[in-house]
Image 1: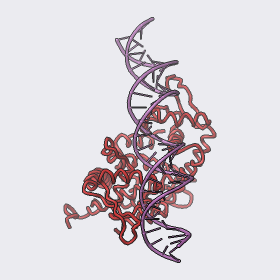
Image 2 (image 1 turned 90 degrees about the horizontal axis):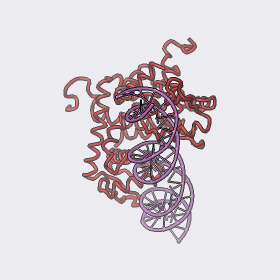
Image 3 (image 1 turned 60 degrees about the horizontal axis):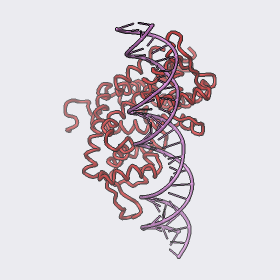
Image 4 (image 1 turned 135 degrees about the horizontal axis):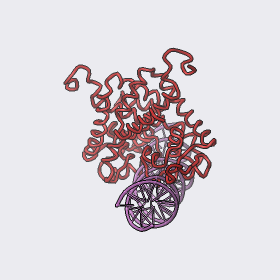
Length: 164
Length: 164
DNA sequence: TTGGAAAGTCAACAAGGCTGACGTAAATTC
DNA sequence: GAATTTACGTCAGCCTTGTTGACTTTCCAA
């Protein structure tokens, strides 16, 4: 009654519906990270390494500072992760030619292999979920997620989505 | 070409589409937690406290072991969080009547106030996202998230969704 | 040539996960 | 009634991943 005030189809904006959405995000994110986490446990790596690997793969040659703004962590935190990846030969860091202060990051062959393993697992779950829900649901899924992002993050997301 | 092999409308299952979904989850989850995180920083609490408060509020009188299975952490980890919440008077722990080994958890007045503040902030973002995307998108959003959960988590989610 | 940006590094710390071991009270089983 | 199991709490120690602060090196650009 009170909840429907204002229109016909606004039942999806009730506190109860919003709470369900919040809990769905919580439980789904657990599933979202579960498979890569399982692969990484036992190796010396964690979720932070996965994120770095993902975005270096996504934008080969990206700089450290660009990666910082995407990941939203401090350089000290990123550096610790990047350090181990470089030392272990998964990531190659190349001094910039036009601006030699910058470091451009690439996955090595070894890095590409781990990236593939991780993203295969994560995509498999995503694919199963997409297939189960269908194309229309997927479109809605993406719409709501995009609307949920901070504007700054939405920029990052769209930059990745379109550009290289 | 190769991607469309097998059907007409399967373009939403390409690796590229899946990757976009993965990145959308990553960036959206940041937004999802941003507002409560902001409220909690400065207080002595963090995201773990928020989760405990949320689910105690959601299921008043729930037991410690039930909370453990929902949150998926160890009792030592939960206990550290619960301890501070009880000591600070946000959560009340009551010895069970039918089974005195169990502890039943409730939010106090003070706990309810913080819960309200946190969930108001989180719901506000969710509401804005829902409103922007519309009811059909919201339905799809929920469908994909549910399909993404581990079966065990989906059970927990549905139990909360229906029961008390 | 000098100021400031980009990157890297060291040290210290905190939150919040984890394991293992142990203790206590209460319920259940034999 | 004794033994076992269950629910919970706690101590100790460890790991990952985040933080701040201070400092250095490199090097572009005014």
